[in-house]
Picture 1 (cartoon, rainbow, N blue to C red):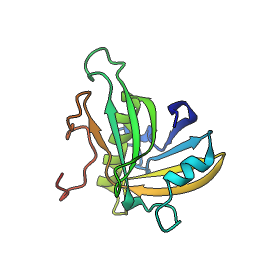
Picture 2 (cartoon, rainbow, N blue to C red):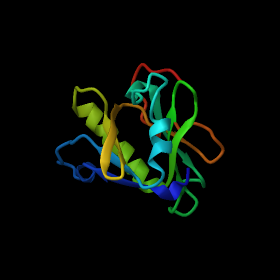
Picture 3 (cartoon, helix red, strand yellow):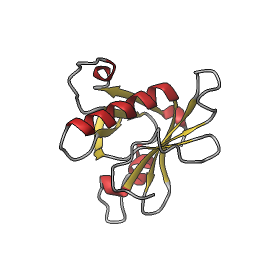
Picture 4 (cartoon, one colour):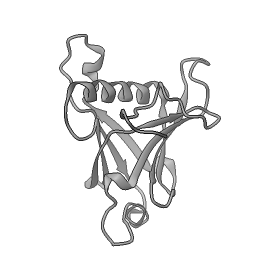
Length: 158
């Protein structure tokens, strides 16, 4: 599936740059404008129901080193945790993704709730699945996990 079929918009992250900003749960909306049946199939389990949040993983893989020129880019991906298959991928600026992760981390520290961020996947303008997530893994360009940049709940061993 082509990465240019997807657009990503984030919400509730501006407060993180404010010292006295009130934490809000960060949200990301992934809009899909391509062959809907293909993505629906990838987002659906063997029981015919949409995959649960626990059945998916969200990650960001850098394409260049973070410190090269401040313009690092990478690929955001959502995968099926059970099969390991990619559900979707899209290109994004590293600064934007890392800012989102920072907001999710700070929100999680301030709130006692399920998940530090919300992912909403929309198909042709209609919400198809919404996930509350607490893990967002970041990998360098060689595939190594960047623990300090990732959002990993305490007590989770990788």
